[in-house]
Image (tube, rainbow, N blue to C red; front, top):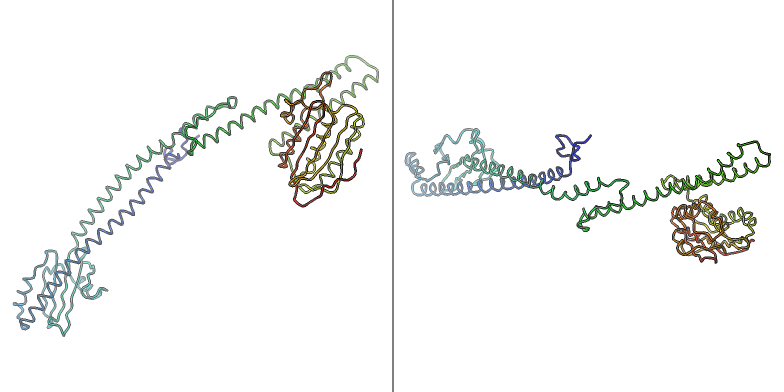
Length: 489
């Protein structure tokens, strides 16, 4: 079970909530940015300090070579003691060592301990040219080194090596790194606290939406979430949830109404069957009375079976489990077959059934469902057309669809009932003295089949003047022609 607050991660939910993740991402990005900034600052600082050291070394080297050149010009036969006095007058910083090698093997040094053998050896291996500084090591300490080598044609023929201790530079760099680390740590702590606080404020609408949505129950779906700002992300989220609640409310209302209507429809034939059986079993009756009772039970059972089939079809469609196999089928052939199969029922009711047939008119549809829709429209027209009336069925081609039209001269539909005729179990008010026929599911199934095929079904009617139902199904362009031919009665 997840801990309170919706945290599902370890460490007490650390990193398990959006609030923590936003804080961690914000802090991590800021840390990465400051780390890059710190490296850049440290590199710039190191470069500037070394540049300053190099400038001083080059100044010292220029001073030393100037003194030596002047001295040799004035008196090239100086004794070692006199040369040492001249060199001693050269002004060098305390952290700078010098080594002077003259022809004849004479060597002079200042701050000699700063120049060990490894440092002198690196002089020979240095990739830097004459007068170009490089960095060498004197044990564990760094030295910045520069040298000058005179040529036999010059006044001074020898080598000058200057080395400056970089301990002060390293100390400044360490202080710079400590300062950057301290500043970075302080900034990250402040960023983490500030990011946590800001994420809490930013996600407060989500918490409010969550709490409000949790209080909405299935029996109380008429409640809605408050939308403070419909233009931001949270406002759009609340609006989407409100739309979802509205659809759920309609679905629950439809389901409750559907269950109530189904129970009502099923109760009547079941009651009739039970009453017929009870009457038949009360005493011994003649054979013809049993036959009448069984015939009544058979009719009610057939009616009950038809209702169950319709309910099963609607339930599968609502659950998206209705098998639909769309293929190119001939609408004219389907309509012709329906009309021929229902013509005996029309003749039994003294109705004239006319239908127009033509050449092939192909549509992409499930032939079984399309046959069911056409049969339901014809059955509806037959049931609500008085004896002596006429029913006309036609199929025509429109630019983007094929249209099945069923027109009758029946009792018609009142204007207030037109918008409800495709609802489940809805039956329009009947004229006085006329019993209601059917379960109220036939036209609902037609509407459902039209929706499955991305089509539409419409009705036009006037009370006492009949009704016209039009079922439109999109078809494959260029397949079929709707030229009308013979008429069958």
